[in-house]
Image (tube, rainbow, N blue to C red; front, side, top):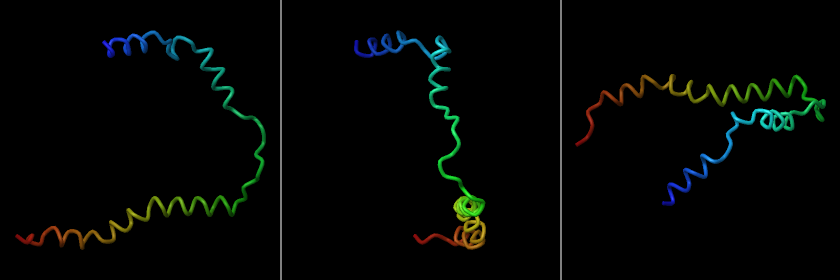
Length: 80
């Protein structure tokens, strides 16, 4: 009985597709049209992008560099 009441409660709510004007107003509230409070310089942008690239590519580079070692371990006979 509890499952049925949950389903009926969910079905009774109007979805976002049936009320697009309310969704549009809610979206407009989140958009800010003011200039930034703090300017970010080119050096800061470069530093942040470099750290991000290193964080994303570092683990992949580590695995690719050590791939021959991983292959050797896989070919060894496991201990019984």
